[in-house]
Amino acid sequence: MVFVLAVLGLLILLLAGDALVKGAVNLSLRVGIPALIVSLTIVAFGTSAPELLISIKAALSGVPGIALGNVIGSNTANVLLVLGVPAMITVMHTSQCDTSKSYYQMMMATALFIALAFRGVFDWVAGVVLLTVLAYILFATMQDALAHRKVGQGIEDLEEPEGADPDMPWWKIFLFLLLGMIGLPLGADMLVDSATEIAVMFGVPDTVIGLTLVAVGTSMPELATTVMAAIRKQADVAIGNVIGSNMFNLLAVIGVASLIAPMPVDPAFLRFDIWVMLATSALLIPFVLMKFDLGRVWGVVLTGLYVTYIGVVLV
Image 1 (cartoon, rainbow, N blue to C red):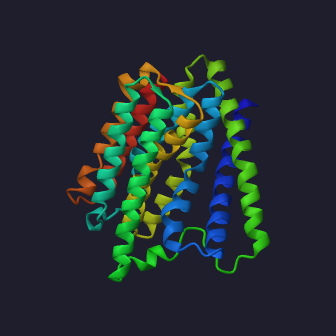
Image 2 (cartoon, rainbow, N blue to C red):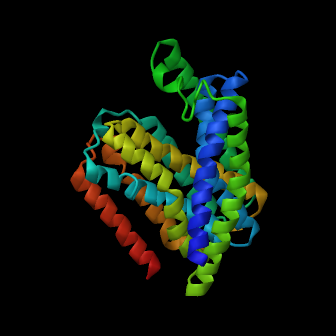
């Protein structure tokens, strides 16, 4: 029964996150907030809502291993699994993408997260640091987007935020918002409580559950998005989705959760898992900086590395 509740909690969480994004995007556009700002802020935060609610719930419930494990595990899964599986389906022409600036920002966020982890706890100080860096990156990104807009570049992507529907009626917007605001905390409660019970049942640390069950579950939306992007030959969307998700997980999710409740860092993370996360992030160098295409062989390698990592964590 506890496994059913965990899956149900995850399903509610993902559906509620999607509903919240749709409601927030269309409400923002209706009240006159520019599509550019909606794309760079509301959509980005909305898609990280499941991870954020899980981390807050886990921190308040006294199981910080699930909160930190979810982010570390999700970032590892996003590179190895979320890019590996689509690459096995079709070649992604990453050589044609220019995501180097976002990649440098993601690596900076990763290095900052690791440095703060060695303090032994993610408290309000760490939260302020992470959110300040996030605010700077968002501001810089918005400045770049506005500059591109002035010279007529990138308008197509910026004018159509995810979930935008110009004809959506007001009642439907508020229904999406209501479902999102009710479903997110409900799903987070169910998933964290069930994951904690599973950890106790099998005698494994909550960190392991966070790194595996919770992390893979919350990476499913990114996997679905990336598979569709690969099939549509949109390599920039696929790799941009992974880079953006990883950056928001580190800066926004952990930043906000750290302000809600202090999260002690399990020494196991410092010995192994954060270094795996850093190493998998570095694996993107050939595709982002050296202009390699992400083909099927690479897909098999990345997916195999993830299966190996999960095996090591569970042993």
